[in-house]
Image (cartoon, rainbow, N blue to C red; front, top):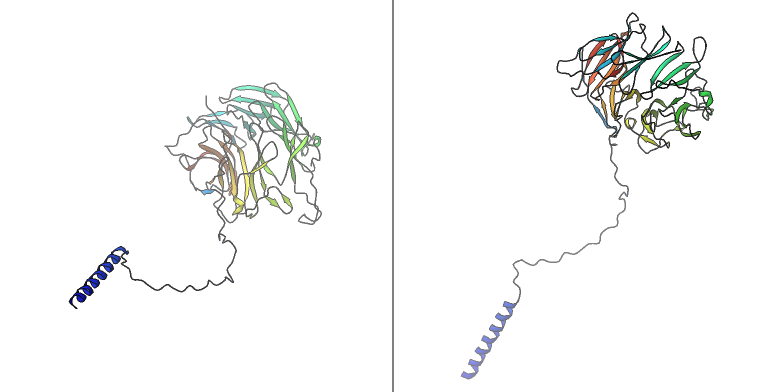
Length: 425
């Protein structure tokens, strides 16, 4: 019996050792086990919208910055004034003159009082005007020295602009006696004396029913713009009369073909190389469409550029937000990177004289409103001279300079009209 007891104890000890060995081989868990959750089936959607959420507000595409400047009665002492302005006097008892901004000297141009038909060459080194007393076209340098006089220019002629540094575009009235209704455009070469005249009647489908309608060419005379008769819609006029959208045509004089047709176009500026035409026109009006896109349109005009192939590029997007009216001022900046324009909108009284960056589309509004015009760039593009008429006394215009570096404007002359900026010798 004693041997059996020992065997039983040995067997129990052996079982205990095996149990210990097995427990050491299993992973040790420090977490408490939890019951596995029961998964419920996902219900099928019944009223979930499949529409993609859209923004509640259109992005601002106008690229418009409002920068209202102070307008002073005189130039501040720390403003640098360089070169000269060409001024004509609204007072018929006074003559036009060259006003040296550096010395404040006035050099008379010896033209008859009240003659404001002066134009400055793109080089800003020559001034042209017609002396109606002697019936001569006169060209002088920036010191007032006569470079050339050409006879045969009487009251039937008025200067439009220099096309380049040698050719002048001149309006010619063809009626013998006033009022003058039938006009042509004369291009006069100041180097050779050659003349080329453009009559609107010589172009296909030309609209010459209104006074003063004429052809206007680029510098190279390879392309022109002129008004034409469009296809009238009998019910589209305001009074029920036929209405054709007042189209103008960009015409290639070399191939004798139409490049582009634009409705209600206005304020044309040719680039100096003659390959681009800048103009103002509505995006669309009634059935007359100039430019198609999917952007909002409040109505009004935008600025476009048309290349030599007739391709149209939109430069401004003000009508995506405002119902605008625009008008381009006298000229490009010297590098043709900017233009001055007038922005006006009846709901935004601060709109006014503005600068457009041609390359970026950025517009800076300087809040100079009222009846202003004839804006001209300084040679360095840092200043803009312009004429402003007082609403209370339209016969007393004033000349101002907008300084883009100092961010202010100031009066520079009384009872005068600015005709351009010239470079001092």
